[in-house]
Length: 181
Length: 117
Image (tube, rainbow over all chains, first blue to last red):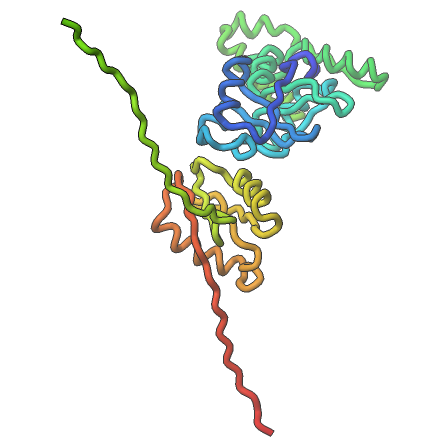
């Protein structure tokens, strides 16, 4: 899944010399949790409802923002956006397309979406993830390998030892695959 | 018998006029972490009132966020030495919601000995 499909758009912009009080009212009116702080077409930072709550209402937005926000391309995968956020320990990324800001994506939204791509029993990626990666590689005309693993007669384990034991076998096998052997 | 009705509203004005000091921040401003005016606003104010005369120094301190200092003072004193003294003194007075203003004068005394031919 691409960032474009999960981003919040349009983004709302505020100038750095507005007050925290003004920004709070603006966020309430627009029902948004974050604003992009811009000055003369340059992005200075992101201010979130959390930043505003911890700042005096008389302060200017420039003193209540996270400066130098990071950007991600709209056609990047959501797991790549997550990697950037993990690496920099941040919760939001600005989404751009050809140097134009078109949206914002949050860690929360990706996490929720990712849960649909991850199998709860094994913590391995599920079929939609593989499909998404496969489609991308086909679009890019890049060769790739797809390994299909089938556990023969697995039903026998469930029958003989019960489903809870069968689940443990699947988990242990998945762990082995995730480790790479 | 007519009852005379009287009604009036009055206002008394009192003016206290004094000269506005420029710049109003003297030599130092110590900005608390939750102060109503933050470092960037202070920097913009000092640039508007006294361009290129003040330097903003961001600080890692539990109560103080930044210090604005007259740049000429930094010519006389090492920044680290000055900040250590300022923070040591301010720490006893400041709350994180306050902005403190301070005057700072530096007097240099020199004593030299020379060999007499």
